[in-house]
Length: 522
Image (spheres, one colour):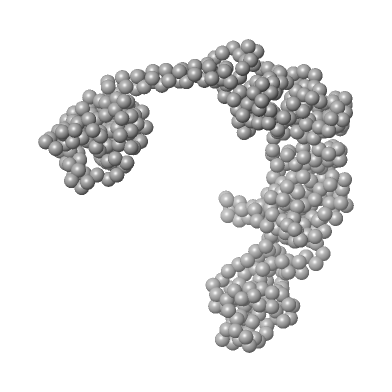
């Protein structure tokens, strides 16, 4: 197989290729076996061998080359031109620098005659990352939209361009072990028993090497058992610890004293979760081991003390105003009082609901209200007051909506009222009518009340003349069009009923709406 290099000669850096690179590319790049079913000849694109075959070969069969014993998919020589590609990733060391290179190989089948096939694989270098103690940068082979031609561009991004799977050089870990990052415990995560790695893990490897080169203290962080701090940093997962990556000692890194570090190690809390929990509690009072244990019982993940994840934002608010240890002791006491120490989640949810309603009602944030003697009784009392307040707010809002509706839109809709010997039709006039119509006609018309009072749409009801108060048909009118017309349970009305509604639209609504400008949507 002939290997052609598209852009290696004009690269800004002299590229070093792994040993037996062309054999590696030839082996890993998918290249089909092309066959001519009339002449009974087949061609292996890996080794270039052409042979006669006797057994029938079908398209997409897996065929083994008798010369190189490579197994590839068979395609007929009359197939349309197509192309395959494969991504490669390797390293090389030069002048105390690590060079990471990604490339893509392309194999194309376009010949019509098996005898004229040219076995060519083209290699295009996509990116080169340079990592050393002083600086970290990369070159990418990117399309210039002004000229329409690709060119080498130096940038700060340290990621590979492709988002696909990579074939990785098997000597990669050995090369890292020979570099200035040999003590950083850096390894590429690959698929088991293969030399394949997803682009995410390739990018993670590059990020880790760049980070370790930029902050040499990472070596001591990993050796101290805090490798998760580095992982969270690279994966952009918040830890809220705020490490000082330029520090030269572990206490300086964690912004703690050596005595604090000794405490955490003695208590078996020297991990990412324990460090954050200790730093949060230390801001309020002197921390003891029982405080750490009590806090862990009620907040399983210390990050919940600082963020709003999983509904723990209320604890963050209380942490800024009150003593967390006092809160956890109170909750523990409530568990024992209610003989429900096995299910702290119920007590926690009960207190959360109580606190949020207390805050909404504007009660003072003092111990008398925050830590009532009987949580259940206090919760029921506050909940009753909270619901009364919400009901009053809804009633006031609905009153304003009704006033706006009666002033701005209802007079125009009343002009469309019509009645004959069989049916009558009129608008819904207030919220009680909307509720009754939805309840008895089994539909969601009550949810349209706000839109109707704002003039966005209009809702009419159709009744039998001899039963003017019995729900029958519900109609939505908007821009002189019938958008909805349904009976009980959103069933379609009978054809004669729908015809009556259409006649009402044509003979009453449209003529009367043209006489004066519309004030509403109807």
